[in-house]
Amino acid sequence: MPARILVAYSTRKGSTAEIARAIGNELQSAGHSVDVAGMKEITSLDEYDAVIIGAPVYKGKVVDVKKFVDKHQDALSTLRLAAFTAGIAPASDDPKAVTDCLDTLHAALEPLQPLASTMFAGKLGPGKLSFFEKKIWKMVKGPEGDFRDWDAIAAWAREVAVKMGI
Image (tube, rainbow, N blue to C red; front, side, top):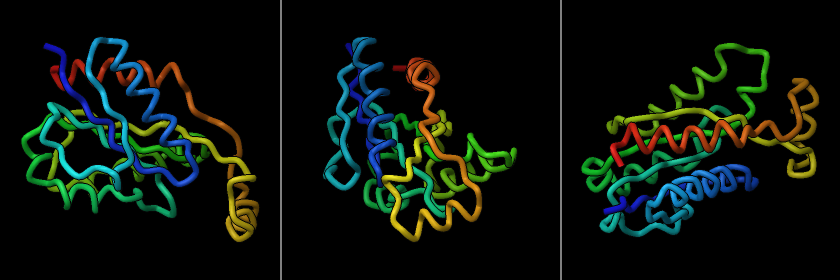
């Protein structure tokens, strides 16, 4: 019987939602029953065998994950769990940036331990930033563009299904 999987995401500018849908599509192509939904819309996890949580990193924080985990901790502790985060860290020159973001993700998931976790490069376009964010980003000379690797995202979705035993 195919697994029933929830890909629960949070997004600010839409990039993480697109990654979540790509993961859901890949899992669905493998024969699983998949729902992809925003974390704030989810009221129950009763019908799922596994949950994949995805959220962007903004200003050193993983958006909405801690609230979601606190709200659904009892159910999540009985389900197979994986998680991802998205952001610009993989496109930066700082080799520690990805590790720091993953540490932040794991802290937001505590006390839960995901069977798999990763960070995907995201998308940052100046048209999606506020005036203040644009000024800051130019000052720090942050990278701009769509850095998402759709092949890597699809590969992770396939790998995570195996790691989760689904």
